Image (cartoon, rainbow, N blue to C red; front, side):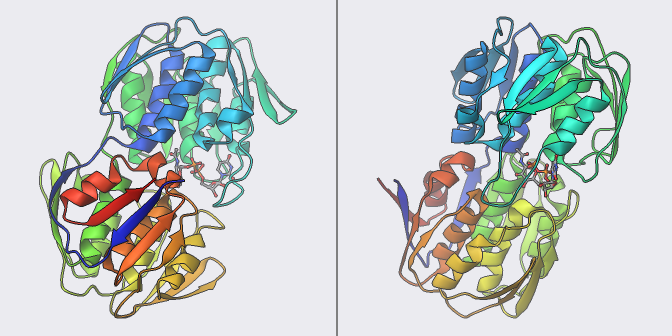
Length: 416
Ligand code: UD1
């Protein structure tokens, strides 16, 4: 299994380009299932999760052509509206095929994702929404089986803010008979990017980006071309990496407008952050100040940046209190950071991080995607060498990570 070897101590400086957003590309690629016409997507990141989704779509009969960051999908010949356990267990986001399949084919069988390292993560809200639209949904042999001649517009109120739940139901509603209103909708920029893509395909959607989304169903959607938005979590991760090393970087092909909560915290920590039109510049002080935070749905601080800020606080001046309110088991990086010398105490969903002067390199194990990113960030400032094991998690969500860090002057090597 691949590992990353990091020689700590280099100050990051220079410029790199940010890739397309994984969490926007996943639902957007699934939306191709809604039409018989080919759809072309650009700025699609080359990541293992995207490869997994494209294989899943191919199994269903979607024709996939891919060149660099451009992907064209043709779902005219779909003959198998099934997402198997083998696929879904490796990537929960596979559940995003459920809404489009039921909407276009009147039937779908999608494996239940089950648990994952960061918590139970049920899909009851996706199911509840489809039932409200008239589908008969049963769970048999570990599979969600949804059936309906044609979905009907409905008023749907989700019990909690769910990102993929909102996306699944928004896609399903595009071909439903009549108007669907999703209340308590997720406001994440990735939901807006998906809505923009669907509108380009002929969907009638208003309100995306707010907590009430209205979708007027149409008979059919058509082909389109869509550019995937920049990855705000990749952007935030590199900003944190530069910040802990006292560095100065410019990230291009991205926008500060998706990152208000994160940039606010980086400025509180003492960084200078300048938003340009399609780029962000960051200049860090010699030592950061600790920053407390609480994760919440967008536009508040994202749970996907919590682990990286724990690494940042591990070497900052002062004590930070970090509250995780989205997932119940998302502090697994804390014990690994402690192996590097971090002073962290966990009490339920709260972590108390007391900054230390120095971390020391050690061998640590990545447990999930963003936990892996926090260990890399810590390794960049630790004394000596840090080996991060199980980096297949990183390959799911960070495109050419060692290359990008290397371009900023980090000493990172992949060991195969
Ligand atoms: C998405 C992101 C993920 C991010 C998360 C929260 C993608 C592909 N993934 O995941 O990176 O960490 O949003 O910002 O976009 N819940 C239920 N029932 C449901 C749905 C959700 O109880 O039917 C709960 C979850 O267990 C969790 C919370 O709601 O506690 C939010 O989850 P959700 O927003 O659905 O996360 P994902 O969409 O899976």
